[in-house]
Image (cartoon, rainbow, N blue to C red; front, side, top):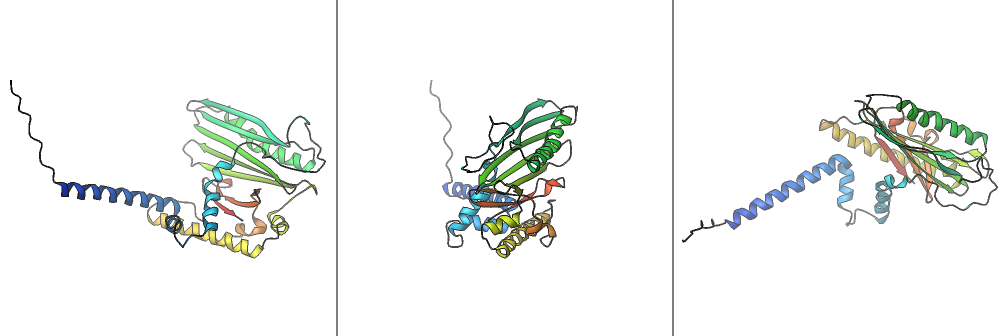
Length: 285
């Protein structure tokens, strides 16, 4: 028995090529639009020209630090060298360690993943820090465990360093309660172990012999750039937390949240500390 298979239709090669190119162009356009929304048009231009003359190695390194911010949080005190006699509360533990750990999930009620630090130094100021951490974060965890059908998502992580006798601790918490917007909360503690006192951002800048005016201008430029991104997104119908570059909060003497890592100062403006938002700005000097 002879079986006659239908003949293959002739492919219009030119039409196929044009169709394929059109699809690729559309995909690229969608990707660029998405990146533009996420990064902002100015920042996207900088990223696209990464191999060109418009971007210096310093720019590349800076963007790498910004991009790797999430990787900083390892729930530990980084290795350090110190030649000071520090009185610990618990001699068997490091100067900062994970004091409270909780990973617990109750469907429709809560989802917790917490690593809360403790500063193991017998000092009145440090103990105030520990009490603040306890009242703010551990108390929130204990209260959450008592809730039902609230759909609370609460995570917390930290990282600590000791550089030039300055102990620096940064805590980052994400909190989502029911239908409310997610909050990103970042709190830092910076303490001079040698002189036994809390240190400010201005004091660290002076200690490192950096130019305060240049740093202030860099902060203003970064915040202004972010506000331009906000305005671009607003024009597209998005609702993003607005910045006000002239606000007193951006002055160095008023900038409370910062920490030190690998010789760099990370200056943080976490708007979720006071508002229902996960927006934040990061300036590294």
